[in-house]
Length: 469
Image 1: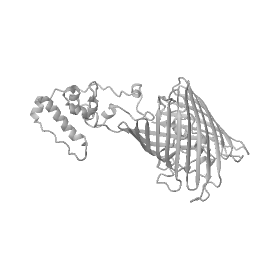
Image 2: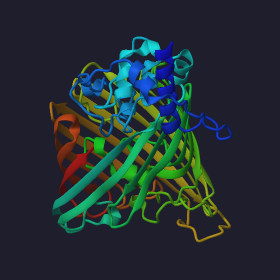
Image 3: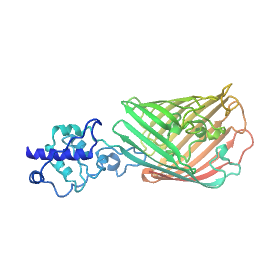
Image 4: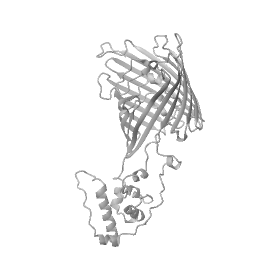
């Protein structure tokens, strides 16, 4: 009993010094005072050397990987053990079960003593172990994409959606941020994009989960088209389709509700309300991202919904097929409506995504309309109703670290007119990625064919080096 009292008193002292009180209105417990002579005479013998480290037990690390971008926040007791000079209290959660094993920092005598003598821990302390000492787990992310326009036609124009106007270099993306989890039901993320010479917010959100439903609040992607939801770092081509950039709303401030049911044919649903969308006057510039970041003024509210299913297994995060295997199918459809003070915008899309033994096929159809109001409260970006359509088809094959992909687009920026704006775009891309896809080198050729009117010399050949951590 005397030994048990000494160990318990030492633990209470450590907890009072390192852990915050459970309630702000309750004073911290005063540590018991034990004579030094009694401690030296009665404390259990402790090993002089730390045990051999067993390392992280997650699936990534077991296979030789690491907790990097695209793998989600690191999890488990190993992440908790990595913080603080003394982890005796943090490791109480590991000792909540009789068969658990945990590791101690070199020199942490209290931790090693409890590890070797778990029977000396009081029952009330074992109950606290599973509840009171969870820490947030944070993981940094980096995405850098540098492009080189090697050959550019003399009629190429960025305002017309071309990748470049003159041969040269561009820093396409330079994103830095972090995501993480707090407890079992809270996730968060914040990212900046430094490309373009300004500190531009890319995303900042907090997500709360309960059963099959998640609520995401903040600045995030709107759940509309498949290609707008896939990360630019995981495309088979260097860039997203021109039609997606022009016709899909990307990021806005608002609230998104979502749910997924893997056991029900991989069914997933999304529904959200956001500050209203604003289109640029130039069709190929698409929507203005985060136009309502500082609050809503003229754009009203926008509503977005999406439904998708993967009945034959998960397709993964990439457009291309990195794992091979049997046939996997994904289907989806989305809708949005934004009622601003000058223009009402509405759009819908449908998509089909297939993967089989390294082959991927992606098809998407988009249609939208813009209708100006009769008495706008600010200058309208369009003067008459406009309807637009686009069709996208892509096929590719991945063998080990290399990917070959072909893409076709047919774009009609105004279905009521037949002019040089109607066009077809054919693209071919080659990609090579390092193990774990941390770095990629890509080369792409875009050929644009005007359906009506004179042909323009606006073909582009460009390359991209990507770092994704």
